[in-house]
Image (tube, rainbow, N blue to C red; front, side, top):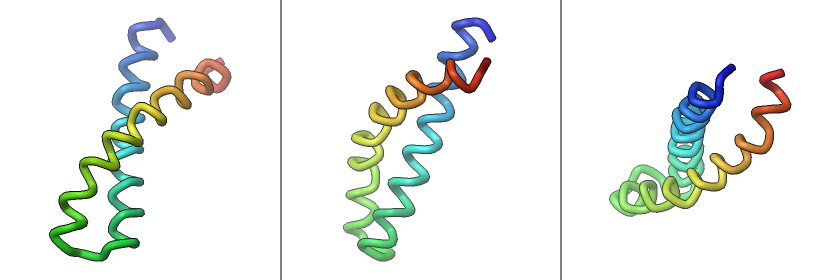
Length: 64
């Protein structure tokens, strides 16, 4: 896999993972409220860089 494809895959994959997981976890903690809708984007913005760095460290090992 070339470097450009790997980085694009990492960006898309980590965005989807971070938004989904932060949404689910904050929904479980707060329930379906207006507070949940206001907190979710903030937690996703915190989670995305962490997921991106983590995937960047692990993707080359799994990509072969």
